[in-house]
Amino acid sequence: MVLTYRTRLYHSTGLLSMMKIYLAKPRGFCAGVDRAIEIVDLSLKAYGAPIYVRHEIVHSRHVVNTLRDKGAVFVEELNEVPDGAIVIFSAHGVAKEVWEESTRRNLKVIDATCPLVIKVHNEVNRDYTQGYELILIGHAGHPEVIGTLGQVPDKFHLVSSVSDVEKLQVENHQHLSYVTQTTLSVDECRDIVGALNRRFPGIKGPHQEDICYATQNRQNAVKELAKLCDVILVIGSPNSSNSNRLRELAEHCGIPSYLIDSYRDIHTEWMKDAQAVGITAGASAPEVLVNEVVEYLKRSGAHEVEELTVIEEDVEFLLPKELVTVKSSHGG
Figure 1 (spheres, rainbow, N blue to C red):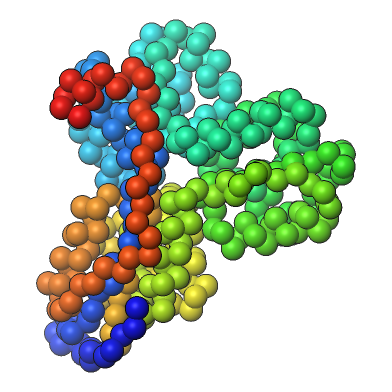
Figure 2 (cartoon, rainbow, N blue to C red):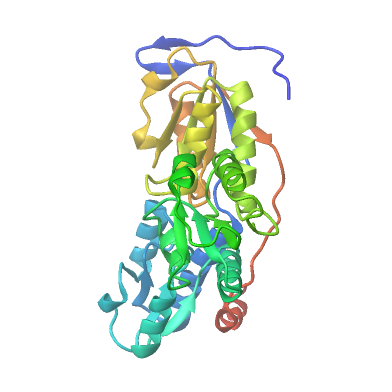
C-alpha cells in the first residue's frame, strides 16, 4: 500500500487534528482466545454460577472482568476451589500435577487450553518418552511456560536469551530437543534457535515452528504498520506476552510504540507531530477496546480511518465435547 499524500498535523488546545488512523488486520482475538472465552460463557449457561477458572482465562482485564460479572470465579490455585466443583483450565495450559490434583479432589475439569499449546505439550511428552533432554524457549513465570515445563519431571531447561544458551549445561549433547512458547517474537526465537544449533549441532526441533499462526500474523501486520505510521498503539494488558512482543517489534522497527489497556491510557503528547497512528491489539484484546480507542482519537481530531489488511484469518478450534450440545441448544 502506498500513501499518495500526507496530511499536516497541528495541536490546538490539546486536540489532535488531521491525523490518519491505520488499523492492523488481523488484530485482537485469535481462535484459541475465542474458544476459551466461549467455553466459560457456555459453562455458565450449562451449569450456572459459580464456575471456577484457574488463572485468568486469557490475559485481558476487560475479558476477565466481564466474565467475573457473569459469575466466573477466578483463582490462582486449585486449593481455592471447593471439592467436586467445576473448574476451567485457562488457555495457557497447566502442568500435569494440576490435572492430578483435580482428579484427587474430584473436580469436574473443562479444559480451555489452546490447541496450539496442547501441540507443544504433546511434543514435549513424546520427546521425553524417547529419552531426549529438553529445552524450552520462553519467558520464566509465564503461565504457558509453567504449564509446559510441568509436563515432565526432569531434564527440562528454560532459556530466554542467546546468553542463556551460552551458559546452558546439559547432560547429553547428542540427544537434545527444543520447543518454544507460542507467543514469543519470531525474531527473538530465530536468534535463540540459531544459538542452540551452533552450540548443539544436530539438536532436534519441532516439525513446524511452535509460534502460533496468530502471533505470526499480528507481528507481520505490525511490520506493515511501521512502514506507514509515526506512532503505534498496541491494545493489550500488561501481562499479555504477545501484546508486549507487538510493542517491542514496533520499537525494533524504529517506531515509538505504547502498550495500552484502553483509551484511558493514551497521552496525546505521544502523537505530537505524528501524521499517522497505527493501532493493533494483542490476541487477548476484544474489538470493543479497539473501537473505543478509534472513537477517542476521532473525538480528538483524527480525521480518517483505514484498515491495513495483511492476511485474512479463518481458523476455528472445536469446543470440548461436553459443550457442543450446549452451544446448539442456545442457537449456536
